[in-house]
Amino acid sequence: MTFSCWKFQNIASFTIKGRRKFNSVHLSTQIILYCQKMASSDFSAFREKFGKAKNIVVLTGAGVSAESGVPTFRGAGGLWRQFAAQELATPEAFDRNPSLVWEFYHYRREVMASKHPNPAHIAIADCEKRLKPQNRDVTVITQNIDELHFRAGSRNIIELHGNLFKTRCTRCGDVRFNRDSPICEALAGKGSPDPSSEDARIPTEKLPSCTKDNCGGLLRPHVVWFGENLDKANVLNVAHKRLDNCDLCLVVGTSSVVYPACMFAPQVASRGVPVAEFNVESTDVTDGLDFHFRGPAGEWLPKALAPHPDEKM
Image 1 (tube, rainbow, N blue to C red):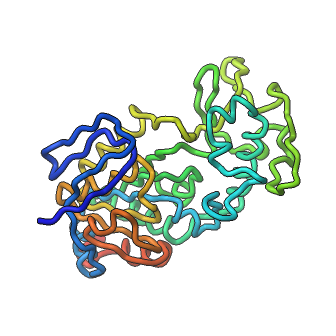
Image 2 (cartoon, helix red, strand yellow):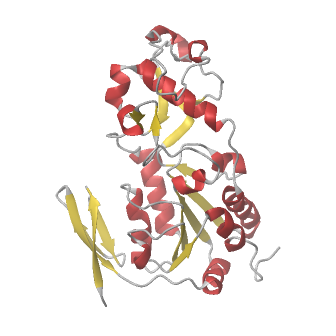
């Protein structure tokens, strides 16, 4: 057996072969021993695993949404006005200037209104619907906040980072869907990404506000911002249960660098469950997985999740 060292940020623990657990003391980085194997591109072998799987988990990241034309706000050109997403998607930015942050998210909501699920989203949703009568489950665990999986027809979805079309009250904590366009009158026509655009400086009382029991508190997007923790009780624990019970895992369109999602595939692989990566490039975890298929998810998933000859139709 050979081992490879992997570095991840602020990792609390990692299980090897489902038995031994290495605990950290929250160092800035921790080296994890991870059983290394070369990922295979044998599509027939993957299809055999798929045909036998009863509990399938599909982990999805920004690459899936990018195939629908959703801006990723990463890398060169990934700015809104002169701001990087990391400058606006923080609690501190919202406290300083909620008007500017709401302009940014209003823009993102409006952009999403023109986007549609692509063949990868549809293939996952169709697979879930087709396998359900066979007592086989498909769960989507996504880092994306655009709800394209839901619009494609998936219903068994865990949204790790929240939902662009949900709001949360900063006063009472009420969470609810809101697909209004615009979400408030003051944001109508605002949010242009043009660097020459000026901050609208909308008064707080005219920004989206809570309507529950006449609360009136300022609403914020119900998404996980930089520096915030995931909802452990309602999101992270549920995701771990699905991962612990799965017998096949697909990793689709994710760079596998954002904690804690970057640990999901290695944790599943460590207990001998087959994991298949579908991505336009290799990632830091590729060589620890069973399969790697390079290319757009929209090209791979329709055939990867198509009915298997052994299925009871």
